[in-house]
Image (tube, rainbow, N blue to C red; front, side, top):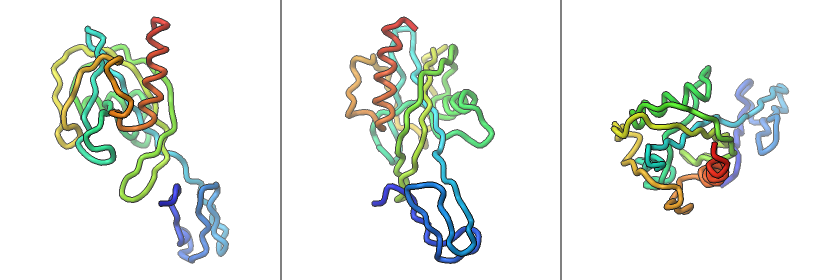
Length: 176
């Protein structure tokens, strides 16, 4: 499986002279059309309860079906990371939160429909105002409140989650 999307036809002129690949820009030898593929933006959040447990979702679909995820998802056009993550929280777990704080960002690959999408995952922390979760079963199979020391890296859905968890541990040690 290639690590990039291979587009054999130019989206501008339709000729089979389009040179796509891992490097930008992709250029058509016939019409000189240039395409600059960029990463997709996604956001996820570590939501804490009053016992310092984190709300993890159990993924209801591929990729990483059944693995631990976080409330979050792809950001929509024209949406800030903050408004996008609040929308995703409402859609997936329906829990009110406060004190949304940016944690960091990590590159990731999201394999879907036979294609590896390069993403930039933005991570936040937040405090739950309630433990009453209303999951959307089309998005989330279940939720689990876990202390971070009880989380096994191999149970997490994506490599970026493992990196963010490492930063989160340092973040909490500093008392932030």
